[in-house]
Picture 1 (cartoon, rainbow, N blue to C red):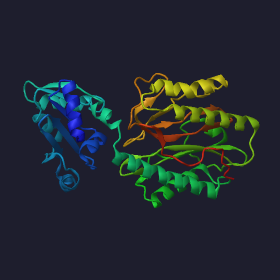
Picture 2 (picture 1 turned 45 degrees about the horizontal axis):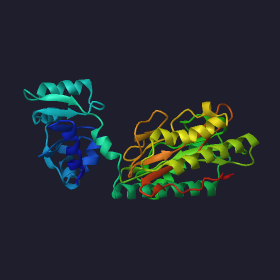
Picture 3 (picture 1 turned 30 degrees about the vertical axis):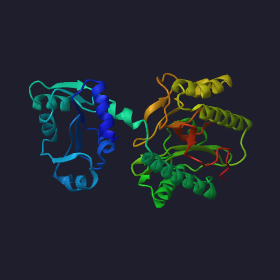
Picture 4 (picture 1 turned 135 degrees about the vertical axis):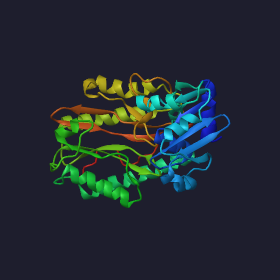
Length: 352
């Protein structure tokens, strides 16, 4: 069954005649189109793709299962004119101005219905082609981590390490990084989303490195925390705590597991050690065409994990002014348990 066919089943579930898809990530997922201006219209009987003259040739090469149409300067108006009945739109991505334009151009009797998240529901379950791309992206990032271990960290700036990792991933075939890498030494590592600085990494500290590659549009995501020499007892203790929490949560990431309970496995271990207040983010998030997507693993998450989900397992402890520790794997949920896509070692590695 094609992705558009699966989407039609959701339209029927929501009593929709059409769905207008304008978010470019969702357009790519449904149609294969990688340009920067395009949209899909999906109904039970029709699959329409519209773009402007700049992308007609690209669409001819990339879009296979949709009828390809060339729109004019007013692409939104062209889309609106084709709507009939109850027409869903993605209210998470359509602006107030765009909604007004749709309402003005739609035929009499068209009901515009908020219907955000339908394509995202489909994207949660990865097929084998998507998993292959994500495995390849993870392997490239693993190789960049190996290069980092060989070259060492001490005396290099955080920014230079980040730039070098990106260059290495691109040399190995990545389209680019999944996101700007995080490289954060010592107290800077206590910022979960630290930005690399032009500051040299000292010896005898912890360094949080978070990076991923992109292959065929699909992302990988991996965090490792390195030592740059002998550490204080507190730093080693916290590292071992986070590692235990990560491994226990990883084992719990099974098809059918409650998402909030998987988060709870790691959170209870860290809470019991007295560091609950220093683990402020969720355990993980979905990864795919976007680096952050559904499903989420948080203390408030609803629902269960399903076969085909690809999620991160990334507990952390962050001690302001001292150091941070985060250990993250990218995991595909399979029928027989989690498949860990990121394979660089998790025992404490010293990269002096």
